[in-house]
Each structure stands twice: as structure tokens, then as C-alpha cells.
Length: 291
Image (tube, rainbow, N blue to C red; front, side):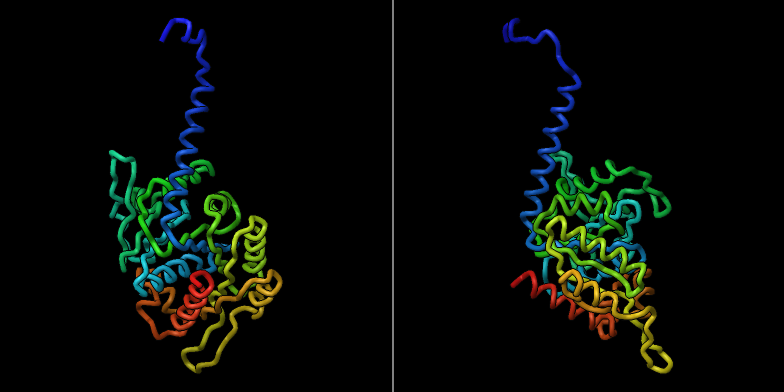
């Protein structure tokens, strides 16, 4: 290089910004290439916490894997990761890192489900993740673009409640995803679930339908069906937004117990009413997106 080709001043701020832009563009390209190798993307969301969204996501992944399909699950709830707990995957396990390629590999879970969660990266289960939005979004993009997911038939995204950073990022980054909204019959949950459906429609994403969780309870003593909340809300939301009510999973004590023990109910209690309803839901989902 001749002396005349050397600039008098170097704008360091501009150089840094250009470097960041280049890195961001490469990350987005990596995400695009990774997701292109996965046939079907299922995004499990809810407007309200505590409706059983992770329970649905985990049992959906297990149901699909039990059919011989290649499945992955990404725990997008950065500050409240519970997927590994419900799958019975030891948090002491760590993703294998390929330092030469700056890539890492999801942990193999039950039925060879590929699992990624923030819980693998924290010191212990009591360690909080105290991050603002940009840091959470950066982690999500690493999970999507830097992880070696390989070729899969399905990937299940378990999102945190609400319509904020993590949900917005996933909906923006993966245009060919299929959204499933989880709610309970409770009016407060339905109010927020409706917002989530509307958000997905505004962003022109395919809403497969609604799953109503904790939909009534059969008394173990007399067998009488008891509505824990006033019924009909999920069906009305489905009609109002022109989406399908995929199913209504009843409340069963064993479901919660097995979630805490790390053994999904579709495996432990395949003949339970919850498992039977869930199998019907899985059939509907596959019919909608595979045919």
C-alpha cells in the first residue's frame, strides 16, 4: 500500500459499527441456514404464565419423538428455563463445544431429542439470569445460529409468557413457523392469550390453533366432571380469531407430579385422559402442517 492510500484519520466508531453489522449479518445468515435444515417449527406461546405452556411443549416434543421423528426443543425462556427439569435432563450436562468452528451441540435428551436451555449454562438451579432484553436476544440468536441442530423433522420452541423481547425475536427470525397458543379456561389467561393470537396475526405468522390446558377435572372419588373455571372461553377465542381449538387437556394431578419428576405424562401415563387428548392434538398438528 502506498502512502497516499493510507487515510489521514480512522473513524474507530465507524469501524466498530461496521464490524458489528457484519457480525450481525453473518449471525442472521447462520440462523437462516440452520432453520432451513429443519422441516417444521412449532412455537409454543401464551400470554399468561402458569398455564402449562412448558408442559405442553415438552409433551409435544416427546410425542413426536415417540413416533420415530427427529425432534429438537429450544427453551427460549432465558430467565425461567424449565424444559430440562420436565424432561429429566441433568443440568450438569453441558453442550459440546467445537472451538475451531465456534459452534456447539445441543444435549441429547430422552428419545434422542436435541435439547438447548439456559439452564445448562447457569451455575446451579438457584442462579438467576439477570439480563436485559438485548442480552437475552443475543443468547437466543446464538442458540438458533451457532448451535448445530442438524437435520430435524420438528423443533419445538418453548417461549416465555407475554409478547415482549423473546417472543418478538422468534416471530421475526423464523417466518415459516407455526404458532400454538396455550391457555386455561380462566378469563384472565384468555385475555392475554387473545393478545398473543392477535400479535401473531399482525406479524402474519401461521397460528395453528389454541390448546386449552387444565380444562376441567374428573373427581377421583365420584367420577363427576368439574369445571375449574367457567367453560367456553377458548372456544370463543378460536371462533373470534378464526383459528382452531386443537384440544382441551383436562387437569390431572399426575400430570403436575410427573412434570416435577422429569417424566412427561404422555410416557408415564399413556392411558390417562390427558395423554389421550394430547395424542389427538398431535394428530391434528401433523395433519395441518405435513399434508
